[in-house]
Image (cartoon, rainbow, N blue to C red; front, side, top):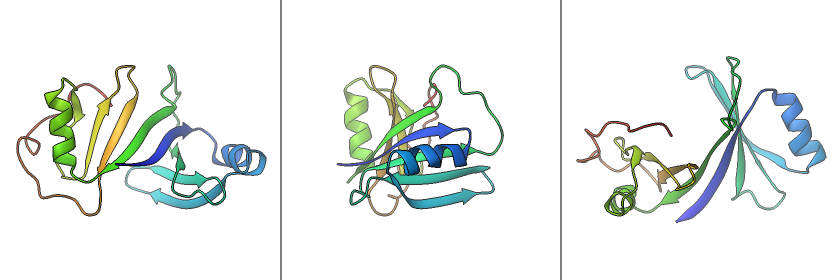
Length: 139
């Protein structure tokens, strides 16, 4: 398993980049604009440590982030997403967003922290019970 990033939602790109980059010293390492999803992802990292990123998510449509919704999730890459989810499920963890696509799943920690699980490399072929499993709760 490898730690990937922590995601936080932001309301103002320029203000956030000023804080995280100019004042705090992080560097932008990658940016993705998603027209269909109407969001921008900006990945920042400390100089020389691009492996551990902070993902800033800017949703183009305004939203008030109450109750900590501005904190998004932790993300981890695993060798076998199906085996990881099976182990979690067998131990009582709810798979909130099953890996139907063989690539991405979400669970929550006992404290309610959302955790994204991503398949290392390419997606695995869709497989049951995941392919037909619906979402449970929110992630």
